[in-house]
Amino acid sequence: SFLREAAYPQQVGNRNLMVENGIDISTEVENFVVELEQTAQTGILVSYDDILIGVLGVADPLKREASVVIEGLQKMGVIPVMVTGDNWRTARAVAKEVGIQDVRAEVMPAGKAEIVRSFQKDGSIVAMVGDGINDSPALAAADVGMAIGAGTDVAIEAANFVLMRNNLEDVITAIHLSRKTFSRIRLN
Image (tube, rainbow, N blue to C red):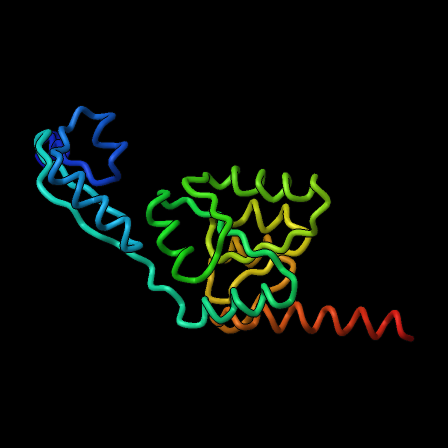
């Protein structure tokens, strides 16, 4: 019960959380966080007793085949768009690394679905590839939702297709197979 009564004024989160709670972020720390973001890492700040005491750089490892898949999709006439909850600097760094031109960052889960719907309103057929709970609304809203098999159950439930292997190259295989199947149906 002592632990419950004791107050531990510690916080772990992004820059916005610290600012909202009146935690001062020095220019040196801000510059360090910007450096992290420019190298495709997200800066996580840690405070204790209203004093910033640390910064961690966290990154999802980029799948080794990502840039090859993006190039393959572009050759197939598919326009890749990155929609992420990450901050703009991190998103731009990752997009540049894999060759994606159109980036939407700092997007909440419902916002991802809204972006899908905005492309559909323009007449585009939208395929969404995702693996997390945050991707579920967009997977459900897309014309074709593809969940990565190693993803969350919620994402898998929301998708039309489940790519069984944790390999992005299966996205190209699925599109190619679908196009061949429809071509054969029309031919018959």
